[in-house]
Image (cartoon, rainbow, N blue to C red; front, top):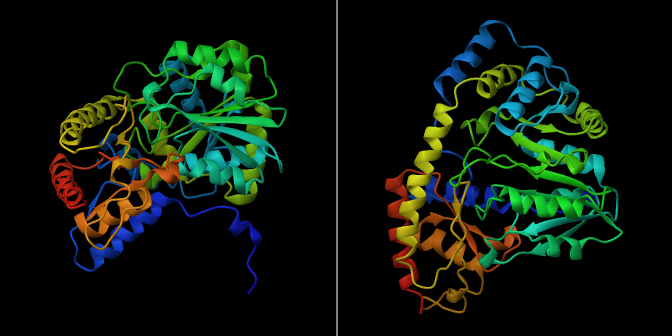
Length: 396
């Protein structure tokens, strides 16, 4: 059987690969602590679950409009005005089966073969692979830990070429936890204003998990708003990963293009999920804020735990629920038989020896680091770092 060459263009996500390996060990009876997946360890808030149950009782069991129910798209517009002071209309909104599908729609709608997409590293593992699937060229722009892994206006300007079609970033960032402030975004916007042919994909899925204040969107700057495509969803902020609901806010040309593409892939998103999403986006955010407070509490404890590990350095995360330490001081060390050559080896060593799953920084474009989630109970986090510390001490 001859499979499509498309499969050779991109890789399996390392996050899902590590989760799979962890499950295989658990199936053998091994007590694996998962610090690899980006999934809140909270249940969906009760009032949102009640909305889903109500939707089932009201027979929301039929095909939905490709772009999403009108009242859900109106709810997205209400949320964007309430939380971000951004004005959009329902025709600017497309609802998808998760923010990952939203990103895929956008990439297929914008990128032709040979087009360049600038992606600051570290970046979420799927960004570069979606560019490859679309036939584009990922231009990875390495950022510095001393600048909290954030791109500067000068670095952006230097990376732009005649082939640049898209700029793709997240704030808060997965995996670094970096958060762009208003002034930083303003400087970037000044560069983009000089290049109106460039589309800016702003992944804001971690919007509510912010430890430093108000979330700032690059779409707030009028001179580039038409260039910006906001991507957001319910998975992180509302603990609704399994519901699969993402959305974009974009100019009508991009929105219609994404709707056209989605119409051939999945059509409209799940009906019950959409009804629950209306409630999530338009009602009390207290459960979301409570969850963020708990993540911040865990972050403070993780800082203490990392301080006990020799050789790990990192930029303190201002959002999301990850730490992303540089671990290269352990490269070249061994436990007698196993030599740690790189971050991939270190992650496998921690999985098989400490029974803690992490993710290699290579997958995020930063090969000297590993990503560890703190979306797990404090008890499990403390046990995980205890195991990690012991395993690392055995490397000489």
